[in-house]
Image 1 (tube, rainbow, N blue to C red):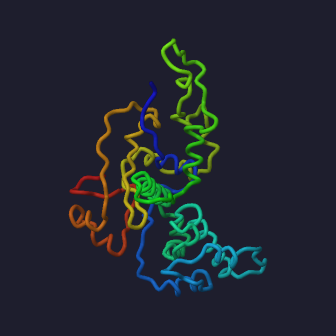
Image 2: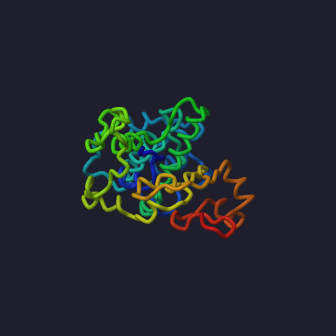
Length: 282
């Protein structure tokens, strides 16, 4: 039978969402006065609860047309609000589903730096962590980028409209369901013309098959493409164990003293270079 593991990888994130999968890690420090941060980057100070604001406040405050003669400062306020709302609603929703933390604002302050961050790896790290917690019943509700999961499932599993393999002969040995299968390679040339996608979707193709850590603030998850080789037209082998990062600080203390300083203030890691443990790139 055609069996194997299937999961969302950096390749999927790049093609489906068009987010960068290479660049500066999406992380920072919470050592800020969030009222001052909001005043500087949003032009107004919302009612903050432990640094978090209501998504509804963003919509009510910044909805509507921007005046044609608006200042650059006003345009920046609206741009920051729009991106922050997207972060809280789509990319990194929290358990409340109604709040977004101001910690994201410093990361999007400078658009030249913001655009170079590896937002795709952060989305995948956050999604992996939440899928793991829900599957182990540590969380009752799932939070993560549902858009990514939905489009990924439509492209690969076709829930509600499965792909019929009409050329598979049941040979009197298999039930009818055997004719249906997962679409392992939805981005192959026969299915999708990759050159019609935005250029950012094809950026850093070497990272599609890289075993590297995915970083989103305190979350670190491994990108283990080698467990789903069929998605990359490769033969499956017995996969190696997945490196677990239960605690960044504890893991750094034990295994990564050489990057401890960069993590503390804060991490300045590049997805391509990865993290080195004992001199070995992981």
